[in-house]
Length: 254
Image 1: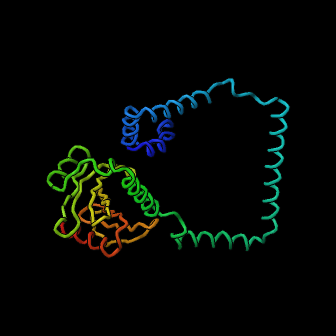
Image 2: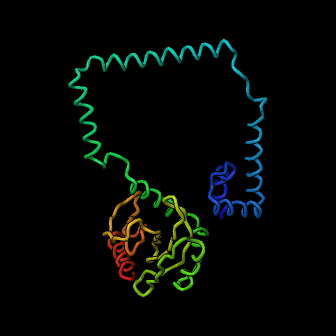
Image 3: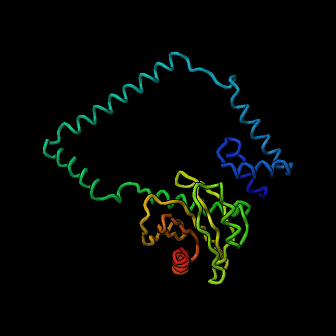
């Protein structure tokens, strides 16, 4: 990990916001780099200083009473304005508005946040982090599927299928553990020329196979499908045609 990256992560490290892998990387760098160690000590000292009770003063009782009274009057005024506005709506119009809102909620699920939308953004964020931190890209580095697959034994509650597609132009680089979709998942890393592909795998709730669903987030292409009881998400800045080709190879290997 470089000094620049460490400096960017020090605030989050001090606040305990980094995951275990990144925390260990920051700790190791701090032990080896005096400049970053000084920056870390400065942050911890500043944080400790802000906890000094002498820096905080209670508001005078008169001022506190005035503020509370002002907030209460404002809240009562807002409630009155809302009631006044609704009071003049005919009962039929109000019922129609409520009915229309219910119909739209039922008939247009796209208006509600979808689980796949949130998961897609989580996938892209994880993919970008793996590109920024080369040391985090792979926990096990190997193009041999018989080395990568056993590495996951005991680390996951399932056995991810691992295949190498070097002869088709998509060599396997290795694998790593990730925590996505509220569970531990396997991440396999492939390469196509200068483009990296993260293939995330975890058990599906249903064994039925589903067709590929393509989407784009922040300039990255994503494909997800289920097959043989597993969820698959492929994320890359590779063009959509070649990413579909990669997905076809993965499915045919099952």
